[in-house]
Image (cartoon, rainbow, N blue to C red; front, side):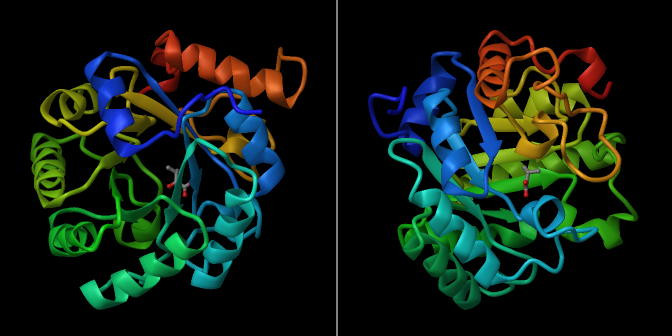
Length: 268
Ligand code: KIV
């Protein structure tokens, strides 16, 4: 049984933004967790390519294949009734409009309602093309895990005025091209706030401060079971809560009440 009484659509998320209602989003990779998340009131379920790290044990998302994304998207789709299911286009699967359409088509056929891609202005044409063919798009700016080697590591982005302006300009161009949602990762809280203020589409933050229109976490970080170093912006909601569903409910409640992220989980 889902707590959503209607399907969560891009239009519904925009209405939530307009009404000042915060959006809860979590990554998920299988049907059982998908059901728990949906029953806990999580509006957006993201089949992230973070599955390469938390499920498959790689040290980055780069080795994740299209086949893996299709497999996990179809698993999640079977556990979901009303939540919006977003699936990541993996590394180098959207380098041209034609390739992006083919890759996105596979994810949509597996049950995704929207696809996500990482990058700035250079992706505007691809976003426009996907959008024109009826495929909803979530853009991803700030820290781009698929570009980790180019960025020189997993570090906060948009700290200089020049970088912040570049991210803001990219966001506006991607919205103009037809993006329906933006995820912004690991940027100063002020930049997260500015993005949410200038865009009409909802901005969902991860390590982007409390003023975004919603928050996303990697599910395994929320449960405190992710491998490797725990980034500052994550929080173990299982600690102090009675089981997995209570942990997810606590995350949703803190997001809705603007209690998460606090300053100890944000960058200034
Ligand atoms: O792959 C993923 O899980 C993501 C989140 C970090 C937003 O892109």
